[in-house]
Amino acid sequence: MRMTLLFIALFYSIASFSQTIYHSRKYQYAIEVPKTFTVKNSVTGSNVDFSAIDHNGSSIVIVVRYCPYGEEILNDFAQMSNEETAQMLNENLHNVKIIKQGLSYLGKNRTHFLRYTHTSTIGDDILYAISYSVVKNGYIFVISATSQLNHIESYEAVFFRTIQSFTF
Image (cartoon, rainbow, N blue to C red; front, side, top):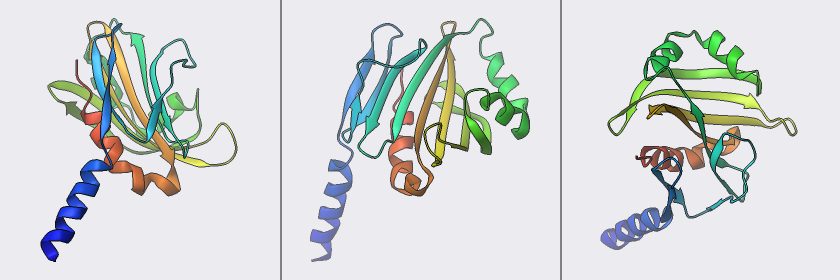
C-alpha cells in the first residue's frame, strides 16, 4: 500500500510539471515551459523576448538587452545595497522590497539573482518575483518569474526548475 501511494505521489509530481521546451532562434537559448503556462506569441515591450502566463496570472518573462559591460555588471549589481536595488527597480515597478540578492550560477553561467516583492501596477495585489540575470555574447538576459505573494508556495519549485532549465 505504501509503495502504491509513493508511486502515485512520484508520478503526480513528475506529470504535474511536464513541459515543452521553448527555443529562441534570435538569442540561441532554451527554457522549459511548465505545462500550465501558455507562451505568448505577441509580447509587450521592445526588449521582451519570451513571455508565458498561466490561469492565475503568474508569469515567466525573459528580457534581453545589449550589455557592453560583460559579466562585470553582475558584480556591480551584487555590490548594490538592497535599498539601491529597490530604487532602481522602482523606476518600472511599485513599492519594491528586496528579500534577498547575490551571485550564483545557472549551469556554467554566472548570475545575479533577486527575490523581491512589489505592488501590482494593476490593482493592489502584492507580487513575489524571482529574477536571475545572465550575461552572454554582449547581452544581458533577465529571467523573471512572478506570482501573487499568496500563491508563491505553490509556484516556487516550478519557478526554480524553470529558471534552472535556462541554457544557451
